[in-house]
Length: 224
Figure (tube, rainbow, N blue to C red):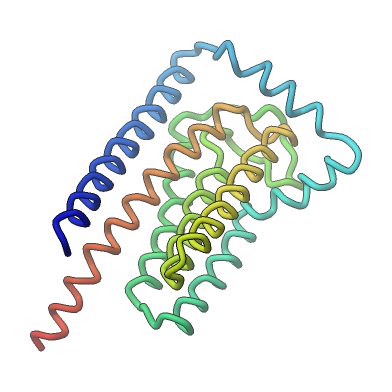
């Protein structure tokens, strides 16, 4: 690696670390505010704005779209990702890391939900809006799952344009999935934002674990 490339990689690492820490701080701040019983002044206007979309064709669209962040939807998509990695990249470390990370993120979401015990805006089993509200499981699972898809899919291409489009598509799916939870009154906006923050932290930790394991396992294999 040249000096210029190494400097760029170092800056990228520092930037990622800062963003990850900020995301975790934001999550903790939102959780603390909710636990203290304080209401966010910005939340109700955002909530009312998006809930006005819950009618007609838009209601139907978001009702179907929200399934992309459900446990069943995420489970099927994760399975497809695992099969694709196995067939195209034969990266067994990635397969293990993806499967464990998505499952662990789901369990973490359940743990925090019971820790905070925030009631939902409304209960609707048809759109997986049951149990506690904070943080949004759809937001957490969508950001880690679709980010992992983008990460491993982008690795297959050298062209920056294709990499950009892959990440853009992933961000679009993540954003609309989160919005769908507000539109359908399954979550408060703060639930979704907190879910994004904690899910992003889980994603970054997953990628760092993957990057750590790959060279270690390669070294072990060579030494054998």
